[in-house]
Image 1 (cartoon, rainbow, N blue to C red):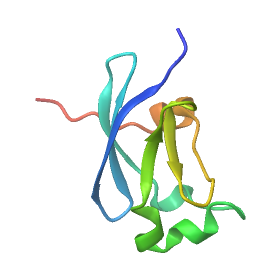
Image 2 (cartoon, helix red, strand yellow; image 1 turned 90 degrees about the horizontal axis):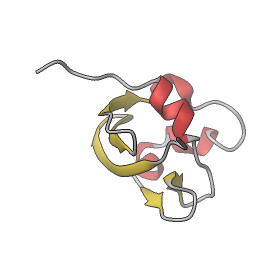
Image 3 (cartoon, rainbow, N blue to C red; image 1 turned 45 degrees about the vertical axis):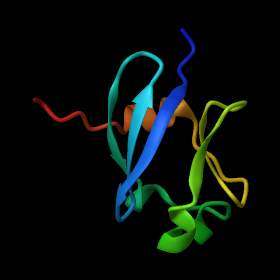
Length: 82
């Protein structure tokens, strides 16, 4: 099964809630994951908040073209117990 991001919602700081095609959902804190030339601009919270789920790539993308693989996001997912 190929993993896709179905939904994404900004929560606070550098935290995004995600829902995946495998049924998993939870949040990722990307504060310490924004390194490298393409992600450096996203340390500006105003730019970070401007992500969307791309229907072709089926993951989150930003205006500057940065994106994160669904598998990477899923590996950092925190699921809260009910």
